[in-house]
Image 1 (spheres, helix red, strand yellow):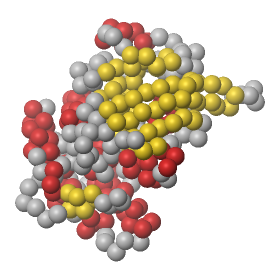
Image 2 (cartoon, one colour):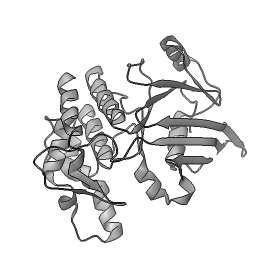
Image 3 (cartoon, rainbow, N blue to C red):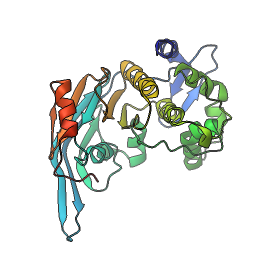
Image 4 (cartoon, helix red, strand yellow):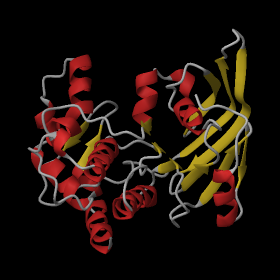
Length: 288
C-alpha cells in the first residue's frame, strides 16, 4: 500500500504533462509521469436538490423510492453512501450521472446546471463507475482507450486513439496505481477481479472527471485489492476530484463523511457503529 501511495504521489507531481480541451485529453511529450488522479482544474463542487425516484410497480401504478433528496460533495472529499439493501443507493448515483430515466432533480457542478449540457457532456464531468467492471477491447490497452475511440468516432477526429493515449502514457498510469503486474497486451478476460477493477478505475480517472461516482466497486474483492482501490480513490480526491462511494464494507477511514440512505431519506452518519447498524437494517424500499 505504501508503494502504491508513493507511485500515485509521483504521478500527481506531473500535472503539466497533459492539457485538456473541451472534448479530448492530449499528451505532451515529456520525460516524466502523468497526473492520473484528479481533474486538471481546481477542486469541484457538486450539488443535487429535489432528487426524486418513481418507478412502476407490479399493480400497474407507481412507487416512490425517495423524494426531494438533497446531496452535495466537494472536491477533495470522499463521501460514502451506506444503507440497507434496496434503499435506492444505486438509483441515487445513476441519477447524479443522468443515467436513470426514473429520476428527476436539479444537478449542478461548479455552477453549471446539467440541463445546459448534453448527457454526454455531463457524463464527461460526472463519471459513473459500476460495480461490475465493463472492459471492452482485445486487450487492456484497447479497453482503457475506449472513451477516446468513441469520441473520435463521434467527432471524426483525424488522430487515432493510440496517438491520443499512447502505450507509454497508459503504462505510466497503471504503474502509478500499483498495477505493474498488468500487461497492456493481456486479454481483458484473463484479468482477476482486482485487476479488472483497477483497470476500469484507471480508464475513468484518465478522463479527469470532476465527480467520480463509485458504485460498490470494491464488492467481491479481497481486502488487499479493496485497499488498493480505496487508496487510488483517496489520492484522486486529494487531487481535487469529488468522490462518492457506495459501500457495504466496514468504514475504511478514507471517507470524509458517511451518509445513510434509508426509507427514502438521506442523513449524515455520526459513528462507525451506526454505519454497520444502518447496513444491517431492513428497508421498506426496493432498489431500482
